[in-house]
Figure 1 (cartoon, helix red, strand yellow):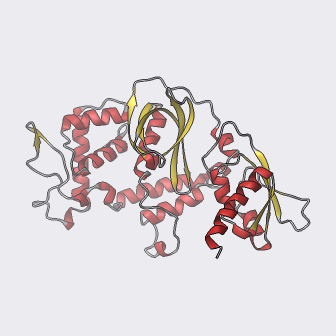
Figure 2: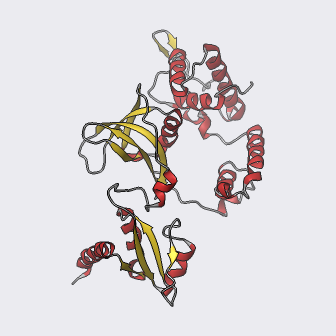
Length: 345
């Protein structure tokens, strides 16, 4: 089957639909859902061919492990007002659960080969980490590879499924009505958001955008794991005017107070920790060695003080002394006094 426009996206969406335990996906509902998701019309014949492709793919890939007569790809006898419902007979049939077949592996290997041409360019440094991730996940190297490398991950992070969905809305420049409940709120509320940017920090994902409302108008940050749902609005998006590279160069993490300017912070580390900080900078965009320190144990960073800054500084414990400014020293001192109360006998 030729890979026509949006083929892979349609297959992914259909696979998710067929895996849903409760939804009732008829052909008509699938056409409507995919048209809305891709913001592009699809024909009845196209979806029928996609369904046929998925069926053949599953039968070819894992059909030999199951009795396809007893457990066909799609459950039989499911109807919604006399229209056939498409649902997998077994959850194991979902394409997302399968390892790549030989043809898929060859295609992916060829893609990696093409991408490898760009690994020596600075803007593609992320490929050095991506390659072993892909090779490990899809068994593209020898079977002992999984014992050679591990990655930090949070399997229980509830915001992960939203990353791709929100990203698609950014690409399509759609205004969203988001149902959101922060940790501080006892109930959720709906917010009109013009989405601009996604950022991962500390194993969580955050959406940055312009919030439009009566109580607040301006740039806001939403944690994906606090988003309960969202829908598209038929509104023109307010165009993004923020350079996100510059935006994050002035902070650690994701929190930013628009009324506070960056300040130079001078930090002195123990001999045991200074080399760690030099090789893994606290803030790579502005971190500098303070040459006035003859022991070369002092650095400066230029950032807006926020919650993530203090969390980072506190993580060094007694290996760090904040030299200046007073606003940062006083905040760290306050935390130190509070922590000391736990251990005072």
